[in-house]
Structure formats: C-alpha cells, structure tokens
Image (cartoon, rainbow, N blue to C red; front, side, top):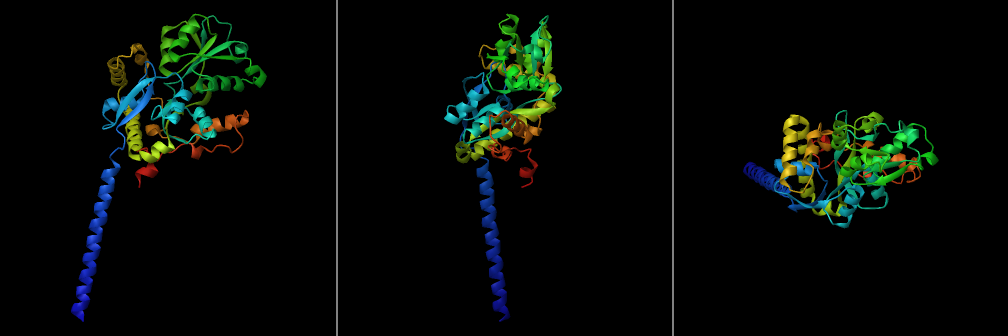
Length: 345
C-alpha cells in the first residue's frame, strides 16, 4: 500500500514537472513570437526640413527589423491622420485636438505615443514684423494670421491667446486665419502678405536668430510644458499588427529619450546627417536650431490632460457635446516601454 502511494506521488510529481516544462516552453515561445513584427514596412509622410522621431529611431537602429517607407511630405496634421484612416499610410501624427475631432467623428483610431510638445527650450510662438502696429491680442482683430492648417494646433494657440486677453467670440471671428506651409510662413510675413504668423519649435528659433520680427507670445508662456501631438494607428491595424505597433512605439520612445540624454551638438549632427542623406531638397540649416526634445512625458508617454484640454475647449465652444468624447477612449500607453504599469507585468 505504501509502495502504491509512493508510486502515485511520483507519477503526480512527474505530471506537474512535465506540465511546467510545457507551460514554460509555451511562455518562451509566446515571448519570442511577441518580439516578431507582423509587418516589416511602415508607410508614412514626412515634414520638410524636419526629422521625425520614428526617422531618428530608424537611423539609430531602434526600429529594426522594421523599415520606414516615405511616401511624401505633408504640411497638415489633420491630413496626415486622415491618410492613416484611409489606409494611404500606416501611421499618422497630428495635434491632439485634431485627433479628438477625428474620434468624435467615429474614426476607429488610437493615439499611441506623444511626439511633439513644448518646454522652456523648445516652443512655438506668434510673430509680427518689427515696427508692426500689432503689439498685443486686440490689435490682431481684422488682420491675417498665418498658420500651417485651419483648425489645428497653431490656430488653437492663437485663439487661446485671444481668449485669455478677454476678446469676445465675435471679435475673435474677425481674425483671419490663413493656411500656408510652415517653412513658408516666415517669408510670407516678410513679404507682408500676412500680418502675423505662428511658427513652431526650430522654425521659430531660426526666425529669432535671423531677426526682423517681434515675438508676441509663446505656447510655453501660455500653458507651460505639455505634449500636444501624437502618433496614431487605426484599431484594425493594431489588432492585426500588435507586435509591429509595439516595436514602433518602443523604438520611437527610445529615440525620444536618446534625444533628451545625448549632448545637443551630437543630436544636431545626427539630425543634419539624416536630412542630408535623404536628398529631398530641404533646408538643412533649420536643424541647427534644435534645442531640446520638446516632449512632455518620458518616452512620449501620453497624459490624459494632453486630450482633456482640447475636449473641454471644444465643449466650451460648442464644437462637441458634453461627454461626447472621453480621453481614455482616444489614447493608450500600453505599447510604451516607459509605462510603469506595463513594465511591471
């Protein structure tokens, strides 16, 4: 009887041992599989004279084995994310307010990483020519203000500037917003085709260095440091290619942190090398004015406030209804390696 009991215990032990080996093998196999991207080429649109963080990530080797395929440039975040929805590109990036509007229109998308923001070193600003009669918000009534695209971040900032100064909606409606490519805005201001222009980050800093224009206000002065644009994929793309999305976010997040922790001169040299090597007839001097990564959260982690700010603003202005869109339905940090809740699992 004792021998029978002993043999039974031995059999049970062997069963549990074998089961643990099988489970361990399955787990390791799943981990290995999880690191294999389903799609090895990602189509995207670039921005003239700028190096996007995914482009930097590819150059640093952080995206391998994924390759980026440039299909052309855009001057508009809303156009870029619309191209992602229609499948013309695999991912797109835009002002978070534009993403809010896209989700409100029932587009099945998810923001996965922040890639543009403002801090004390890197920020955008509103310019007028030196000697202009425009000295403050109220002086902009009836004048033309250049922005990269109607209804996007630059128009939001100028409008917020006017609202903070106490201008009424009717007065703000008299400010004429004119869309033009970001790299052309400063020239249009000099030619007096525009009365004021909003320039972002390094384009703004190049204008300051060249002189001839007066800076009225920066987004950092208005709101402090924050992230204001994100990359997104469609829900369908994420469902079909979760490992590809994870690798993309991981590589882009690491590139952001590389830019934050690497000496400025080394970052500028790398960015210039990337721009020169792609032979797109671009102004390579713009990257000389790069100062900082300009992204709020570590590794591009998205904060709920990056979206609630614009949701609240749209509700206030009657663009959205109360509770029409929830921030948590717009974005996810689940693919970001710097997300502690993910890293701990």
